[in-house]
Image (cartoon, rainbow, N blue to C red; front, side, top):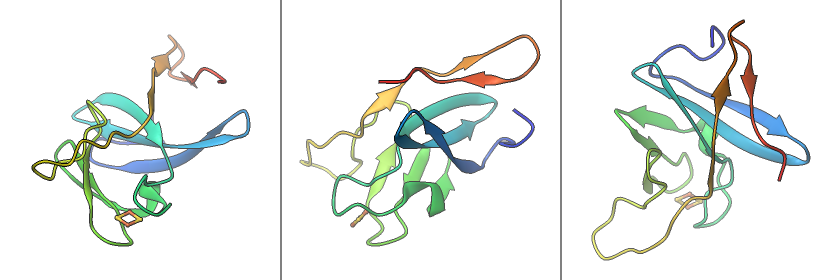
Length: 95
Ligand code: FES
């Protein structure tokens, strides 16, 4: 977890897919790295609490639920579970 301190994001690969690994107050979340709007790299975005802001058009996504933050927008980011092992290493499922 040292590579992803609280309040930061990091691009990580699991199998052939890339994810944005996000540390929200010590809890890790992994969401698809490609923004559903137009494919912006969410790991290059900024984090506002539990919300990642896409670097391309500033759409906001709640990484704890995957939901888009705009009222009336029912889009979701794919999320996968994150497992932190005793040695601090991180495992993501390959899907
Ligand atoms: S590609 Fe992310 S907001 Fe447009």
